[in-house]
Structures are given as C-alpha cells and as structure tokens.
Length: 336
Image (cartoon, rainbow, N blue to C red; front, side):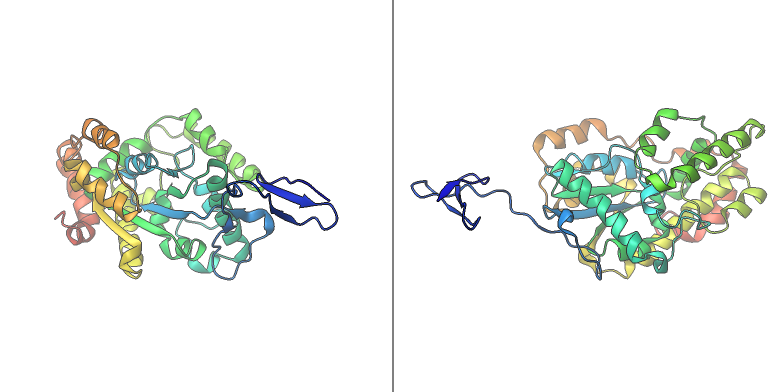
C-alpha cells in the first residue's frame, strides 16, 4: 500500500518506506539539490552540515581602503550576501582569542577552529539561500595563509589604496567616540564561549578611555605584531602608517603564492575613477553579471572625492612620518 509522500510528486510505501514518483504526473517535482559543502581538507561534514553549494569570496585590504564599499556592492549581486555587521573578526579569532595579534599563523588553524569558521559560512549561506558569500575582515590581510587553510576553496579580491590617504583616514577612527550600535551589531556574532573574555576586555578598555586625556587608549583596526610597542613610541598617524604597511605587505606576499585564478586585484583609485568598469571585472571574477540598475547606482553612489585627501590634510611633519614608515610599500604599489 502506498500513500502520498512528504516529497511533492512522490508516493511512499508503508511496508518499505521507499518513495517513488507518482504516475500520471508530468514528472516529479524535485526539491532543491543539496550537496555536502566543501569543508577544508581533512574535515568531515555531519548530516546537519548539508547546505546548498556556494562559493566564498573574501575581500582583503588594509583599513580605510574601500573594503566596506566593495563588500556592500558585491553583496548586491544576484545570489550574493554577507553578514549584517561590519566584520566578523570574533569568528576568525575563535579558538585563538589570546593570541597577541591578528597575524594568526597557519599552524593555529586546528581542525576544530577550521570546522567552526567554515560552519559560520555554511550557516549564513543556508539561512539566506546564497550561492555566494562575501566576507570582509581587514585583519585577514595579516593572516592570509591562516585564512586559506581554513577556507581552502576561497577566492580573494585584494584592494589597495594610497597608504597616505588610508593612514590619514584611519587616524580619525582611533580618536572617534564609542559607537555602541556598531559594537552591538558585531557582538551578535561573538561565539558564546568567548563572550566573557570580550566583555571583560571591553569594560577594561572603557576604563582606560577615562584616563586617556586625548590620546587613544586602545587599538583600532587590525593588530599587527609589535603594535603595542609602536603605540608607546610613535604618534597615532605613524602607527596607522605601520598598520597599513603591515597589512599590504603581508597580504601581497601571501596572495602572490596563490593561483592567479583565485585572486583579483584592484586599486581603490582605479575603482572610484571608473566604478562601473572596475566593478564589472570584479563581478566577472565572481561569475556574476552587473544589472543595469546596479550600474546606475554605481555611477551615482561612488565618488573619487577622497583621492589625495590624506596628502592635503596632513601636516608636513605628519606626511614625512608616514612616507618614512610606509615608503617601501607605497613604492611597491605605485604610490611613490
């Protein structure tokens, strides 16, 4: 005896439980095809980790280099999406929260760490029905080999901006006040077991702010090796220049070792100068088309007004400090 099954267009045998197509229909209505997501090598997927296959595209860039702009635009492509917060550094740091910097070596990508981070991507794709997950966390610039061991089938978009402009813009963020809503959006994605650590650190940082007397008491942006020492002996703009250089140099070196098919490079200045043309190249890299409506938005929304702003805003002494620190990386990327 058979009865209507739980799959549209199928009948279920009471005796065997087997489902077969119902005769008389034009054909069974197949459910969406699901496949086991590609976990990093060496990890097995549990039945609960079955999701629609999707690609991962990670945006790599130093702070204040157009990474937010690029992520938000890419997330508007058909089938693409991202997390509803600025960054997920808490997710990337899970299992390694006490490491002194964001420059996590690949050896720290232990199986349980890889499983947790890959699972976060999988859950987002499944929950939102995405075929492409876009992710941007600036600190990943310092740890591309670690990232690539965690997500070994990722593709990368590497954006570079003039380090003088980027450092000048970043310095303003170091002195900005507390944005509680921004913090709360990111806090939603803190791994539950890490909440006590980050809560205590947040409270400690706020106490330090009370006695800062105009000088940043905490760090902002990716924490590079030696950042604490740099803060004690260098003006904030100098620390930002070191931060930019550390991010750009580490990312450039690591990405150069990956197949060209997995990396797309773009200069911020080129992007804001020709947003439609450059974005079409990025979309093609992602296997996507740019709808004309989005192209029109690019023409309206993307401005090149910030090009060269840092060089005009910094004092002569500040500019000399930035050039002295970041000079080699600036020259390597055509910003001499």
